[in-house]
Image (cartoon, rainbow, N blue to C red; front, side, top):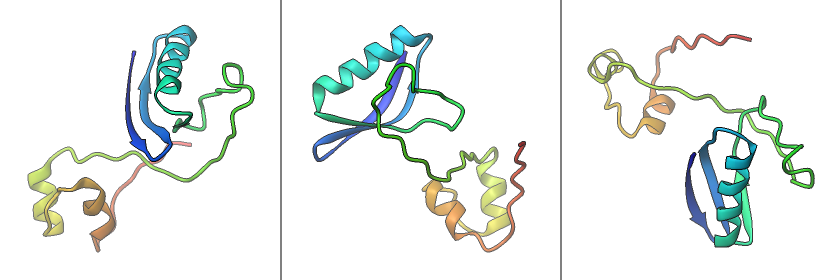
Length: 102
């Protein structure tokens, strides 16, 4: 497995973690814990970390993963640069088609 993380004062924030099984996840988190005393792991609401991390503090927040399939088309339609991606979606003044499956 692998993880994408960054240092933030006294903790490590893990934005993405890919693992094959519970053991791989435990090893990745163990490595992170050796670097800093606190870690923040951001996962979807469908991942139950309670079994592996029974004493972890849990908080939830709204988020949506998005991507631009065609940067040229996006820039043409919305008359703005597609980069940085975070700003691109916040600054558009036209409706976006975001198909959510419940």
